[in-house]
Length: 96
Length: 276
Image (cartoon, rainbow over all chains, first blue to last red; front, side):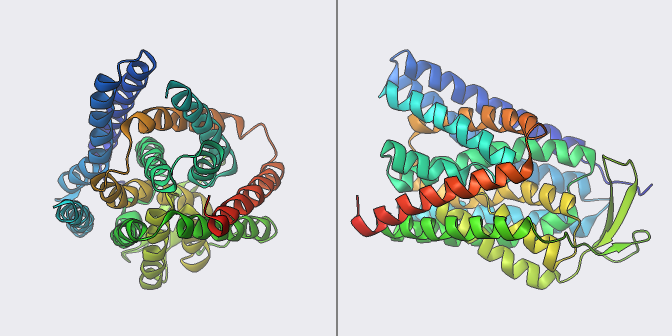
């Protein structure tokens, strides 16, 4: 059997991040149904931000996990993370 | 407003479930359902659909990484390209009005439906090898149905990366996963077994969708009160769909998708022409 590189930390951060985002968005949905629109908007926005940050956190953990065993693959993850950084920069500059 | 949120929630469950059963993701059904069925602005529908893509992809990726079914090395080699495409698609969507986006969506729906009809008749392609060598993109996975280790070799990485930019752009422009381009590219062009192509594509979807979703967010096109029911609904629907998919004939589902896609394609093209 081929030896596999570590994935546990990446998988865990993806699971926790999605669960947190889903929890916040579910709470936001429930608050909206209860008629608390302002609070629902704030909680849901936080949920959206957590959701957007989760894949980036996954890439960051991938870099940490693979930096010793597979440094070239870690560089690929770093490049992908850098491109997400560029996307965020384009978004911020476009807003200004 | 509450009625719209409840309707969006139900629509997202349906779209997420149907997408998971057919294997094309929920966006292709969700966006027209929100835009045509509920009168949501196309840009807003695309934006929340991208959030649904991120939620489903992230959850599934964790499981695929743990099981070794997703090829992380290959996914990371291509995800930079799809993310660049995602930026291009997300940026371009901001320049196009709703009519043009509706028209493009209608054309893509027709193309995906035709591809689905064709793929049900063609054989899967993969370059299998005896065991993974020292080459950078040799790898293997354990086939869950047989328990056997299957070794394969990825080819045409450069061409695959170029096509991945297109897949990412399509995802960012239309709020769909991009798997409709990624999976056949990896399977046919790069020789990756279909199971690894599907799971690796899923792994790539979330970072790709984030690259474009941040642009929609910055333009104020993500309505948090719409995003909440849609993401939660897609999440629930995808889980239900994954369970139900084993009980239903894939051929029947594919035919059903073709019928639904044809209906929404006509509706989206009519919106493009009439501007309603």
